[in-house]
Image 1 (cartoon, one colour):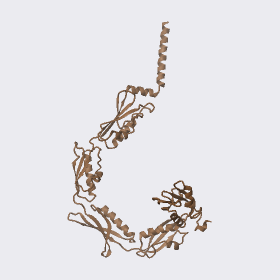
Image 2: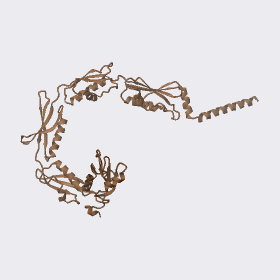
Image 3: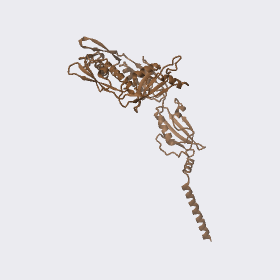
Image 4: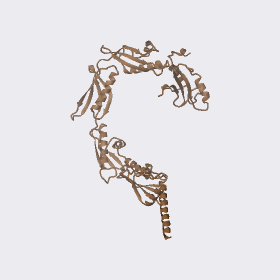
Length: 473
């Protein structure tokens, strides 16, 4: 009988142990996390910037009750709290807190940042941010200069409120000195009056500007002894980079006037201290090229004589880049008047074997001709429908008509529009836009566009070339 009782007790003990083990296996992870949190109660945990510890699941992570800042002086706690993602009332995340520490250090306003969490009796967490501002810069003063203090402070790289030390102050001194050297004060010296000692709370720099450099003007010496001023001057030392820039500028200027073989050099004069005192540009112009012939290639719609009428730069004239540019615009306008709104005109220069002569060829890609499609009015006010009828009653181009620019321009004046333009979007869709900018007239007429209103006209490509309005039928 005693043996049976012992056997029964042993079996019951084993069953109890088995049940406890099964319960342990199927218990939620949240219970395990809660037990771990309970065992760590009242402990303070520091989180370094690189802490990669795995946070508790969001559904059971403790809430942050408060974010508290200590150690700040010049920088407000509000600014610090607003700069991080750890927020009161939200679940705590160790990775987020580690990232917050890094981000605060990246602002450059702290010498050190340390964040930690403290468990509270109610199960929530208090997040502490301990900052070391180092020695915050409280003021910046620059003395002895005729330049703007604000301008020099900007170029120093210093900012009030940020930590600084003697190294940073020295960097600021050099930055201000280099800035002055490049602005006409090659002998400027900047010294530190305050900001290079641990007990300093601000920076004071003194500037000795020295003698200012002369303003160098440039004169082109042309053949025959003629002296022509070049409208380019600057303050400061003369170096090769600046001379090269000026030389390119003058070279392009004369090539644009037809002197394609121009050569530009420089002559420098030095003072007793071996500093550059003056610079003279020496220009060898060479021959000025004459346009011997003007021709066209690729044109089918408009004949050569029709295009030649639009030109200002003709055969027998000296080449002039500005005239050529204007003629390209005139040729495009001539095609737009025939509804070829996106024609391409590319000028090409062919130099002759004869010295000083060239041929000017305009290579033309006419593109598509366009007709009128849908018309959309963007109007304001309650009488939009009535005003749309009034605005379009004088529209000169009915649906499917050839979209001639000259008709658009005339109608633009009729509706008192400010601008007319033809545009093409990335998908190739084309439209003409008529807009009104600026203030309204005191009593704007209903049949006129009002300020801020526009009309868009869809332009559809014509399958086959059409010439003039008579061809549309």
